[in-house]
Image (cartoon, rainbow, N blue to C red; front, side):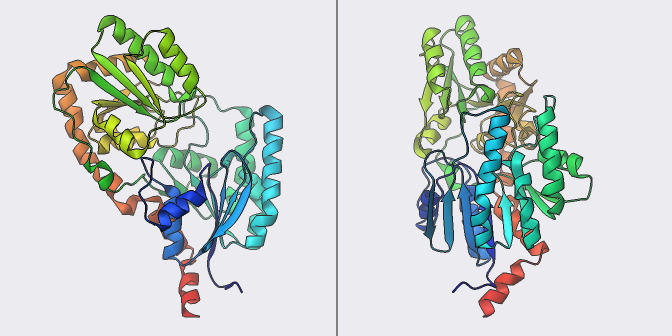
Length: 408
């Protein structure tokens, strides 16, 4: 029989293979990807507060549901290949189908991350006294683009039907917090900002670059291979540099996405195979090796994307590499001293930033040395998503349920 006094936390997550991540977490196996795992932090929190968990993911493929230990895992793929009104109707249907299972679980807490534009469809949870924790990993709307009418309508619905009933929220950056306060009003919501945090062990094997970079100057990119991530900006920079300074630059593009095949075809068409290498997905060891061979990291996300932080900016700093990016990436505010800032979508400035780092030894040294003073914030567990979530649970007196359950 279920202990009704035990804390129950539902987590609406993203496109993650949560069952595999749980096995990895349970067995303390090293993850095969590079970076922070918020799913593992969720498992840590549930363990710390003695809670049962219900994890809803959106991994493309097949629907599935299973139980592992104190966790229920349900994968509900979101609609694909739809746009406009049909997409919004499909998302409303997706949330409606979620309701029976969510209510059956009877959560005390609901953490919502995925599908944030349609959270208004979770309006009913407030009727059951559920403590709502919206957790934002992207900005609510693009920072440098006009807000579409549809976005305004969706966020007004979210504000009225869902966010108005939340007492606290988690935000991955200052930009997200600012937009939340614009939407909700000052002091209407307790907002705790967190950072991507890493174990030092992930970076021990990555050697620091030489103070004066040797040729060829290597630029590293990691992320989804999509147009809005700026991958074609990188190809244009490489093309220009190959004309003006043949053989002096190399670009490593790591990751998967819908544009990977198109990107490779373009690189072939421009005869840049010796300059631009499209690696595809790399496990953590191989990715670390490519990063270790680089001199700088580029994050050219375009104004079309709702970037919430971009963890690669933090990872560049932890690896001692200057990062080239724009204010489209909210992470810039946390790493500015070690970054070369350019105007959003400005290919000319990205091109000049790469050149300056490669050809101005003093400038490169200044940016490289600035990395050291910025690293501690990303190693400190007090800045983690897990710690901020536990703080919200304490403020809501929900951790007391853990104590009561243990005393039974």
